[in-house]
Image (cartoon, rainbow, N blue to C red; front, top):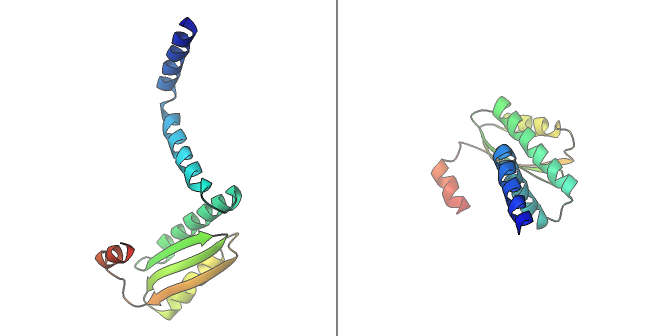
Length: 125
């Protein structure tokens, strides 16, 4: 009984000193839960996440004012949303193809004004 009490006290003391790690463990557990149902390998899953982060950064830096979504699956990048001109559509595709490890880009960007956020919400719902 005293060993259980001692172990509980040690864990409580460790929890106080490792506060930041708890949040990391929770996030990591959530990622593992998402990956459990995914057919991709862990490496490809992580690479797809990296591709999406790099794509979002490029979109934010180079194509402000456009509504562009980037989704990667098995290193294939899907672009959806709206851009104002055909030239912008081609420039976005070229920028995304320059991201390391992207195999191909499916450019489904529509040319026209950005849809309002309320319309996006209805479409998602």
